[in-house]
Image 1: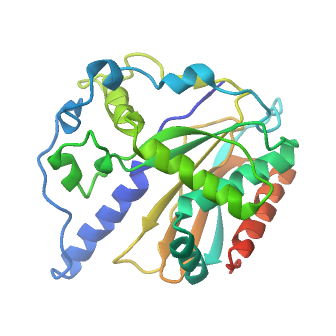
Image 2 (image 1 turned 60 degrees about the horizontal axis):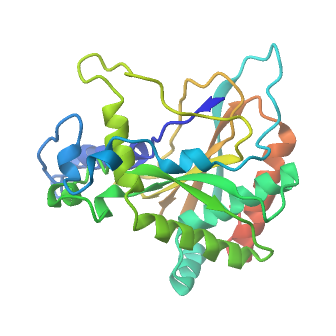
Length: 293
């Protein structure tokens, strides 16, 4: 069993912190919007969200598909976390996204799932579970105060069940449609309030354990953080307390004409698994006109 918590908010919060530091150096840089600190439960940020939805785990957890993920961890191996970096030329990515009305998130989803399918010989008809963030500030359930937030975006992951396509371009469109569909639901907003309800406000301890994904769930996670400003060549490093073999978690962010792709992974990791992911990522980005830098 593996425990995955939704934490994409951190990448966006880092950008806000960069902005505060930049303001200290140059007051012409505006600070993030000043908003009222919400209650610990954050329920008032989504006032129209029914309690039975806000305080309940995601219903999709009851219908997770089964399939291979990564090789079983080896006994007597001590696992830690490390990060790898890939960099791709961004102007071609931007042009492709605008022309085809898709997002970078969909491109990441396509690349990662194709790598997993290749490594484990998973058919296109088998659904893969993708854990990806959605900006809950744009939720139809968000209050005006929530919509104004900048420093803490309140993003939370949703679960997308995605099948493969023979064509890379068709698969990107399919992934993008799955993201758009999820944006119209309560799933992201409910994740924010549900996780808040699981933590004791005074002690900071979990009231009960988060859901643990079965080891036979073909699960991958990624997040396109967006654009970092007010910094030059930002480099991020993800630290986790996972001490076992888990599927890599992929993040990306734009810096000038470069799309940085950060791969947070277990160390050691099966070499063939990473090779499959990097090869498929290169193929996908090459297909849309970009190339590895």
